Image (cartoon, rainbow over all chains, first blue to last red; front, top):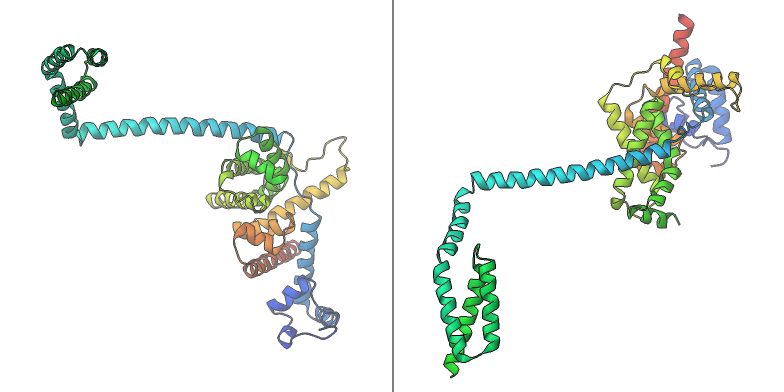
Length: 188
Length: 187
């Protein structure tokens, strides 16, 4: 391109393309010369161009504002505060979520809750039955003189009484042992 | 080295977090100052931007440079704040908030200080006519001295869009200056 004026369309010196090139200092020497001549004869362009250069000079000479003293320390303190707040908000949200779920269960899920409570009732009322079964198994185990079995039965009985609140674990252990006893009888 | 420190900051290492704040406080604060116009707003926004950046470091891609990412967080925050409030300029603010205030014993003379203060006021008045996004572009271009490609990484605009918007913004600034001068002559 050298000293040539690059494009006829850019010769329209009021065009955006020309101004962009002029501002980016990408005009060729020939174009620069043409531009200077134009500025000397066009007061509108000259006024705007000088204002443009003034803005450029103003921005380039205005120093970058520096952060005030202690800025980093204050930012660190704010970061810590933000983290604590986030943690507290997390805890509070979890609490309210649990509360909400509980309220939902109490209101819309009350039927399901009743069913669950009924299971508990059944377990408690069948306590007598479970105890009887346990005693029968205990007698059978004694007859077999299986000490290990007796020990296991003792543990399950202990579990039953300690977890009498629902008796589930003891009932499970009892059932397992009853099954074992049946197998033993079958093998005999 | 920087990656190592950023990784440590991601893991909550306090020394690495302090390093990160000290390293990036200047560009973040400068952007906030130019965008929002007062030291108080700039400090508040810069702190919030850094806190947000650090709290969201997990989402930062370690393969990329941190500066554009952090400046994007800052720019978005400032644009949000500007949209929420009308940008008002009060010449009285400058003296009260201490920005560019000359202090006895400081390296620059009172005359130079006064000149800087006037410059800062003029810059602030000019930037106030731009939209928040254009103000961000102009600030990134002049004071953060980012290339078009880097501004593109910060703003997610294409390079040609940035060139075009910057051109329009600068022309608007020149015309505003011209208008001010003409108003000064007529009054």
